[in-house]
Length: 161
Image 1 (spheres, one colour):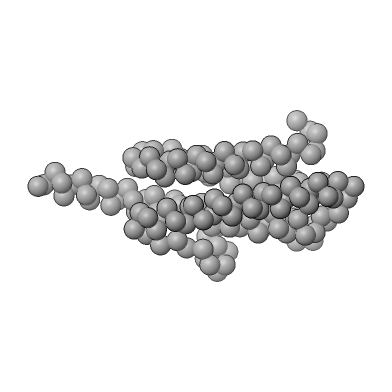
Image 2 (cartoon, one colour; image 1 turned 90 degrees about the vertical axis):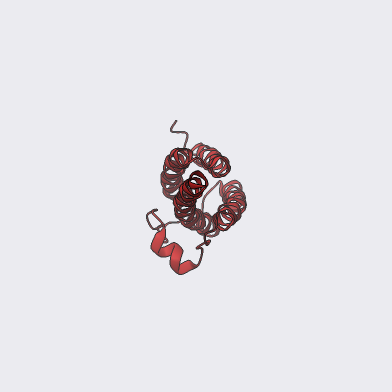
């Protein structure tokens, strides 16, 4: 019986750690989703239509991952923390500049934030692996892959790499 109690306590501690990481990534994902819309609405330039669609597509993909991250936090016995007030306080991403308009400025600003979120997602995968939560590892891996692909799509427009 003692072993069952220790296992349950260990799982509860791991789940609490995973819920905390999921909520941190949730705040960033919601923030990135809103940033994608900011760029989508305000960019100007000769590649407007393609970039306008790209930012909107990224937003749609982000929203799918937002839902998955939030639901996993609840499945693990926690709460999904996704109000605008919580996101503003919890995001690790730097604020998106609202006064920019050019395609290049939006690509640079959004790309920087995608890269930061990707780094956070990758480090969270390692932490969740240590906690032993394979389901959350899978969720974070899918999220990380989407961030990496989005970063590649966004930065490919600069021709700098």
